[in-house]
Amino acid sequence: MADYRLAFVDETIIERRNRTGVYLFAGVVIDGADLPDTITAARDATGNNSFHATDLYRRGLHPRITAMLDTISQHAGWTFYVAQPIGPRNREQSRQQALVRMLHQLDEQKVHDVIADTRAGPDEQAQTQREGRKVTIADTPDIDTYKRLVRSRQISSRMRMLHRDDRQQPGLWMADAAAWALQRAVAHDDPQWWSRIIDTATIIDAHTGRELTVTHNRAAPPQPTSGERGPEHLSQGAQASLLLPQSYPQNRGPASQHTAPIHPLASLLRQIEAAATHHTQQQMLRSIRNLNRVITAVADTVDAAAQSPESRPAQTPSMPDTEPEASAPAADTELAIE
Image 1 (tube, helix red, strand yellow):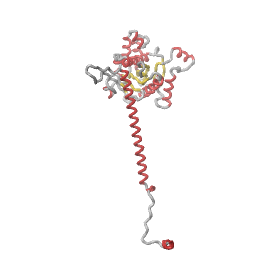
Image 2 (spheres, rainbow, N blue to C red):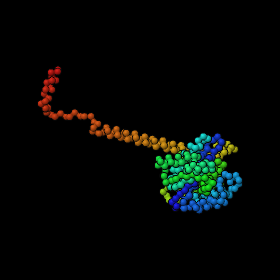
Image 3 (tube, rainbow, N blue to C red):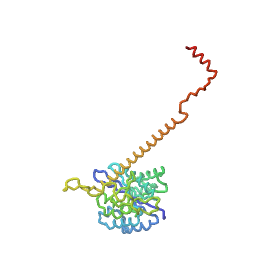
Image 4 (cartoon, helix red, strand yellow):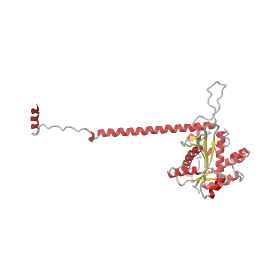
C-alpha cells in the first residue's frame, strides 16, 4: 500500500448571474499507507456525522469545516483543482473537458484509484443495483471519457475511475471541503478557509495545464519522478500571479477617486484567458518553426539536385587535333549543299 495512491474528487461551479463562470474539479490525493488514519481523522472531524460544507456553514457549524480542512492539511499529499470556464448551456462539456485534464494530471502522479462523487441520486443508485449494472446513467459520461483516454493510451489502464456516494465515503468529505473553501475564496472573496489548505494546493487550467493563482503562495504539482510525497516546494511561478495582483490597481484618475478591486472570480477567469492566449501563441510559433524547417528542407533538396551530375546538361566532347577519315564525306555533303 505504500506506493498506492488514491484521489477523492468532488465538483463545484463558481458563477455570477449572466456572466461566465468556472467549473471546478477539486480533489485530494492520499497515500494508501495513510488511508486508514486519514479516514479516521475525517470521521473525527465531523463527530462521526456526515459532512457537507455548504449545509454546515448555513447551520453555523463552522468548527466542523475548520476541522475537516485541517485534516486535509495534515493528511493529504496534494490538494488539486482543475478549472474550466463555463457558460449557461455547456456544463456537461465543461465537466468532461476538465475531467480529461484531471485524469492526465492524476495519471502523471501515479494515482491508482480516482474516486469521484456520484451524480446519481439514491433512487437511481438503487435501480442500477437492481439491474446489475456497475455504472449509473448519470455517471456514464465520465466513464465514457475515461475509457476513451485509456483506449487511446493517453492514460494508463492501471488507473481506475470509480463513483461513490459521498454520504458513505469520508474521503469525499475532504474533497467537498476543499471545493467549498476555494469557492468561498473566489466567489465570495472570503479566503480564510482556503488559507488553511493553500500550502499543498494547486489550481490548474483545464485547457492548457497552466497553473493559476488565487493568492501568491501556491504549491506546484509534485514532480512525477522526484519521489516527493506532496508539493512541499513552491514552483518558480509561486511568487507572482500570471496577471496583476488581486489588489487595488494604480489609480489613473484624480486623487479623490478609487478603483474597485478585481473580483477574485474575474481574476481567475482573466488568468485562464491569458493561459489560453499564451497557449495559442506557442502553437503559432511551433507552426512557424515547423514551416521554416519544411522550407529549409525543400531548399536543401533543390540545391542538392542542382549540384548532382545527373542534373547537369550533356557536354559536347572535345575534338581531337586530327580529324578521323569519316569526316571527309561530311565535308563533301556541305559543299554539295552550297
